[in-house]
Amino acid sequence: MSNSKSMTFIARTGDVEPGCPLQVHISGRPPIAVVRLADEFFVINDTCTHGEASLSEGDIIDGEIECPFHSGRFDIRTGAATMFPCVKALTVYPVKVEDDQVFAALDAGACADTPV
Image 1: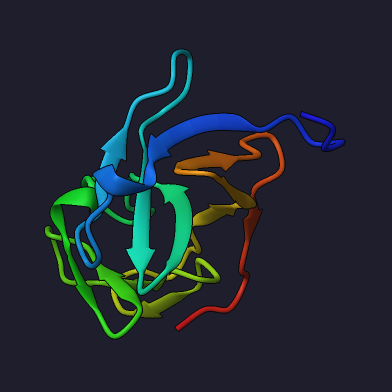
Image 2 (image 1 turned 120 degrees about the vertical axis):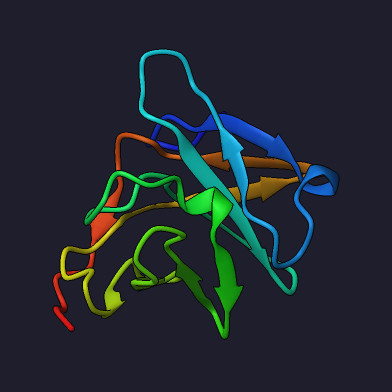
C-alpha cells in the first residue's frame, strides 16, 4: 500500500454486521473491535477503559458502544467517554476500506480527551 501509515488488515466487510461489534485479535496487540455503523467502519480498542470488559460483547446504541460490565458508553466515531462510570476515552484507529476489506493504522490511534 502506498499510504504513509502502515495499514493492517482487520476484517472483511461482509464479516461485520451493522450494530454488532466484531472482536479481532492481531498478534502482539490487545484485542480490537471493528464496528459498522450504516456503511462506515470504525476500529477501536476492544477493552473498556473502566473495567477491563470486552466492548465487543456490549450493545450499540445511537452510535455509542455500551460496556457490558457497568453500562458506561463511548462514542464509536471519536472514542469519547459519554456515560459514567467511563471517563477515559477509547483509542480509535484510522480506517481504510478497500474492495471488501477493512484496514486500520494501528500505530496511529487517537483518543478523545472529552470527559463525561
